[in-house]
Each structure stands twice: as structure tokens, then as C-alpha cells.
Length: 374
Ligand SMILES: *Cc1c(COP(=O)(O)O)cnc(C)c1O
Image (cartoon, rainbow, N blue to C red; front, side, top):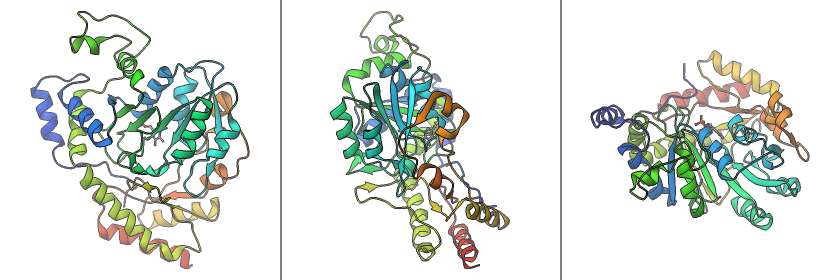
């Protein structure tokens, strides 16, 4: 069976974990954590990166940082993972789901603008498949209405918009190192703080609401409870695994891109039967995902079954949040749902992981061609 995903291992993970055990400093913000945050700050040219237990946790930190509360409205796509919405529903805020653009499955800036009211506090954008949203348009809208912008860049490490790394354009960016993402440590994430004024508070929130991080830097002589917060730290054991991957980031990226490009070239002739991904001119992407859209949900189901019968795991993706039980309770869709539901039902993701064998890529391509020839 060709799996949909295989967690990435590059070689140095075990050695670094061994080193972390010997140090011994296993809790958060340890030596490997420092190497990872330095790497992120240098490579992404961002002011402050904090490692978190997950992207979910990093999103929850942004809910605290913008002080989202009951009565606030947060605009985001309905086509996303539950964590994007949970982070703000947990603060009592109300979620305003809007439509995506069908070419990229990214939030539609015009739909954002139409959903803004005097209660709107923030826009959360999701860079689907590691391909950037229209950030110029979104930042312009946000600035005009004085709104926070949070980039859910869970899938988007190593992707750029007009040369700027994703996650560093809005006020905050969040990244995931879950095993299904390009760079992983099992479970893990990062918060990118692009707003200088928010750095001190982000460090306090990460350390259970204490100024322990200032204490460690020798800036205060004892640490105390300063604010609400939680334990938003990543163990140094996980950071050790992650550092091995970050050191190999270019290599992993090139490998994934070559698989992505292989699919893209080999599937061009299916253009009549399916829609293929579209990468806008301003974007360079990290090959997080290769997806097709069939004509309808029925065809997608048949295709998934056909591929499965030929030992290929292809999978659907998000069920629009506004149609879910919790989505109805904590938010609602604003405007017309032209593409979210329709396109979420047609979308199917192909196997793509670091080190995918050429033979396996060809196997997937061959069976896609044979399915659509029928
Ligand atoms: C994976 C993902 C998350 C959650 O990441 P975790 O690290 O598992 O918490 C959030 N948002 C999006 C868009 C994702 O793809």
C-alpha cells in the first residue's frame, strides 16, 4: 500500500535526542529549543519565534494575545481545521465563516470585507496546501479597519508570498510540526510574533502567565504571576527531533517539490476530467499537498475506492466547519457559500511525503490515467 503520508525522518533525530538526554535539560526552552527558534528567526527573518506543543496551542496563544472575548467576531474560512476556530471559541468569541476562492481554497478577501462589522476583532487566514492567501489585499483590509491578522501557517513553513515567508506577514503566525506536516517532531508547533509590542506578553503567556523567561535572562530577580497563561512549551526532546529536520529543511523541501512537480506534469493531460492545483504568480510553495478536484462528490468517492483497490491511499479533506455541530453553535457563515461546500466535496489529496519513490509516484499517475480513461 502506498500510504497517504509517511512522517519524515532525515537521519540525525536519534543522535540529537540522545544528546538532549545527556545534557540533561528536557523541559521547554532548552538548548535544542533555542537552536530551533534561532533557526526559525534567521530563516524566516522574524522577530520572535516560540516553540509550542502544537499549532493548536500557538493559535490558542493568539486568542489570549489579542484578548478575544465574548462579543468579539473573528473572521476565518469555513474550509479549515477545527483548531483555527477552537482557539477563539475558547475565548467566548463568535466565529464568522466566509467563503474561499476556488483556485486556491484560500479565504476570499472580498468575502472578508463584506463580513466586517463593528464587533470584528481579527481575521484569521489559512494558507491552504502551503500556498499563500492574497496577503496584500488582506493586510490592506485589516489596516483600514484596524483588525488583527493571524496567519494559520500550519502547512506553510518554507513557503513565501512576494518573497516574504508565510507566517511573518500578519501580526502573528502559527506553524505545525505534527507528523502530517512537512517538518515534524510528532506533535509540536511554533508561534511567530511579528508585533514587537507583543513579544514580552507572548513569553509570559507561554510560561503559565509568569515572567520566568525574564527571570532566566537575569532581567528580574524572582518570577511571579503576571497574567493569565498556560503551559505552552515544547519539551526539549521534541525540539531535538525537530532540529534535525530544520537543518535539512532545504533538502526536504526540494524532495517534496520534485514529487509535486512530477505529479503536476504527468497529470496535465487529465485537465478535462479534473482540476489541478493553481499556484498564483506571487507565491512560492513548499509542496505540502497535491490535490485534484473531480466533477462531483460521487466521482471523488469512486476514484478513492479505485485507487485503494490499487494499493493507493488518497484522501478527502476538511468538512466545512460551518456545517458541523460545533460550527453551528459557535459561529455562522456570512455571505454566500459558493465554493466552500461544493469544492470541499470534490477535493482529493494524493500520497506525498519526503522520500517518496519514483516508482510509487508513477504507480499513482498510471492508475489516475487508467481511471479517467474508463
Ligand atoms: C495541522 C493544522 C493545524 C493543527 O496543527 P497541530 O500542530 O496538530 O495542532 C491547524 N490548522 C491547520 C490549517 C492545519 O493544517
